[in-house]
Amino acid sequence: MPLSAIAALAFPCRSSFTRKQKSNLKNTRNKFPISISLMAASEAAGEMEEKSSSPLLPSEQQVAISQLRDFPESISPDYRPVPFFLRAFILGASAIVAAVMEADASGRFLPKSLLKFISRILVMALTTYAITQDLSFGPSRVTTDQLLESSSSLLPSNLSRLQSLVPTIQNTKVVTNLNNVVDDDITNHPLNVHYLQYDNENLDTTSTSSHTYSILHCSHGFGASSLSWLPSLSVLSQKLNAKVGLAHDAVGFGFTERPDVDDPARYSIAVSAGLGSTLVNQALQQNSAANVRENEQNNNSNNSLTTTVAGQNVALFGHSMGCASTLRMAIELAGSSNVDRIDVVLVSPAVFVGNDVSLASLEESSVAGNRENGVPRKRRRKKNSLLRNIVRFGRKAIIDAPLQYGLRRLVSSQRFWSRGLASAWGDADNLSEEDVKRFRWPAIANKLEAGLLAFTRAMISGYGAYPGGDLKLFMDVLSLPNVDVSIVHGTKDNIVPISNSRKLVDLFGGSGLRLYSMNGLGHDPFEEDVEGFVQTAKNAINGGIP
Image 1 (cartoon, helix red, strand yellow):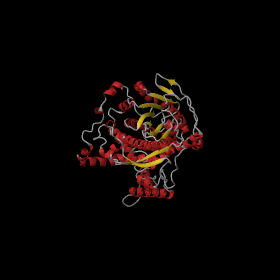
Image 2: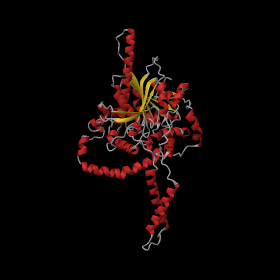
Image 3: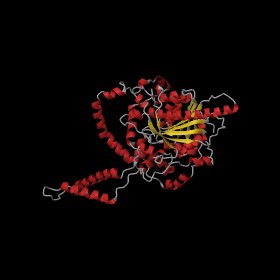
């Protein structure tokens, strides 16, 4: 979700699960959702709606069933209630302290105002209760080291992987200034990255379709993690005949390692896109090596000396805020000798079109339009270091600490996630506890709140901003000869309205950009209706042909 989704999560319009949601829960746990949507072509607007979707095969239904694990018994994402005897003690002790404060010099209890006296008791009791709950009954938090030592027992899915990766940021167009925004210290700094990997054992090796993929990669939106793609990753890989399906947690989200939170440049979208590019390149190289071995075996049996390996096709999916990361990955991968073509599908893209934007204005945009840093980042640290440390300490104490505490309380609450997701779903009654659990799993990650604030600070400060902005990035990707881009958007999206995607089509329609709308779905169509979304994505990649 984009940054604007914070308000939707913090001030939702629905409460907890409805009766209909609870009655549907068993079905959503044990059965893959079957739904049929409508499709009608509109060439002028470049927009299409789903006509039909072929039902999943039994093997695909089995794969589509949730691969999400339950929380281990030793792990709790919730604040646990303080025992009754301890609450009674806190209340009694608060009353005694308040009474002592109201006593006169002779020790007699003479409250001047009963309301003030009761208020003082409540303030002390609630404060003590909150501190006690945080210290002794707070939610579990898991560090990256614990994840590495756990042999995957603490990871949320059987598709989960944890690996040390270095972001691939070689193309200088990915960042405003490689020295000022994402310097060598960042691009050479490995991070432990959590990602999902689905190996497609049902790959159709006899397919002659040009839309057979070596790698399929998915990027998540704000407030989410790679787990949001868990229900659809395996089905997408099967339906699109992708050999490997991948989805990684951006820096600041999920279970990916959170580096120095005082260095927001490390949390920029450029770095997260670089990690995704590294992950895809690694899989491409492994696939190339496997193809070489296979060719060598065939050559030996046929007495042939040919060992040429053709380029590979890649499918990139991005959701909401993650669409910017996906577009950056497309630019990075498009120049790879391992890649023949790239198909990009953007879901509810949070790439906003202003009223006065035109292709001419985007063509004139340059690095000057981005945040100018002036002095290289390493030198800035040395200059006025005392003042910077004072400001940093003040920010942490006055701003960061209360925000982190508030976020900790929110993300540890199931009600917060169920209300927020209900506002994002097209039909809140289709939201299940399994959906909520996918968003709650990352809440046990260590330094979750600090990472979210660091990412937000990186976005606001413009670290890693693309030269000319995200619309210029969009235009540059559309101009690549081996890349096709499509948009999928729910008609009932309250976070990023579908009207914004229509503006994107109006702006870039001449480049072949098409919009495929999904009737009745909200901001997360790939979670709300997996089957319908997969068929829509397949149609989009095929140019509207089911």
